Length: 126
Image (tube, rainbow, N blue to C red; front, side):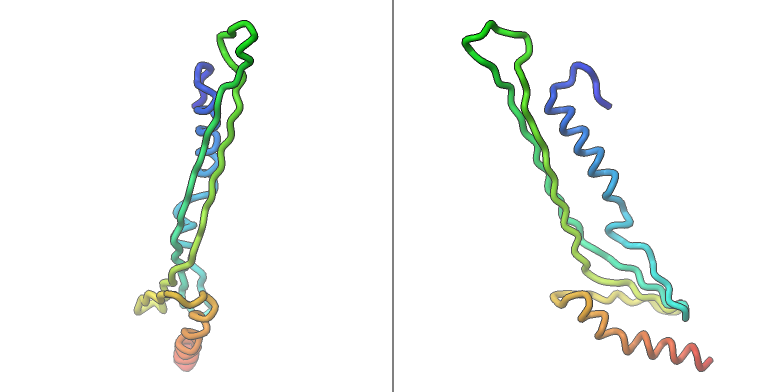
């Protein structure tokens, strides 16, 4: 909530935080499940790191007559990093956490692909 008597830096900070909240939510950390045709659910899990910076200052010409409010200049910035760390895999009977670790996500998915295919084939035979 922005009030008329807020300092300009407060307005910048409030505005930046509102915008950050609008794109960061719980679905970013624990993603939406993806369900395969055989009923296996895969839920991505990520690590989020965030940094925020804001600053500003008031400037005036000291030779000019003193004013009640000086001109203001300010700015803010934010950075967000989303790093996948693993997947929860459920076939309806068991739940398994697949940690990506130091490998890239595609390499880890390729490692567990045979297990997923085996699960699909087993269910197809039944």
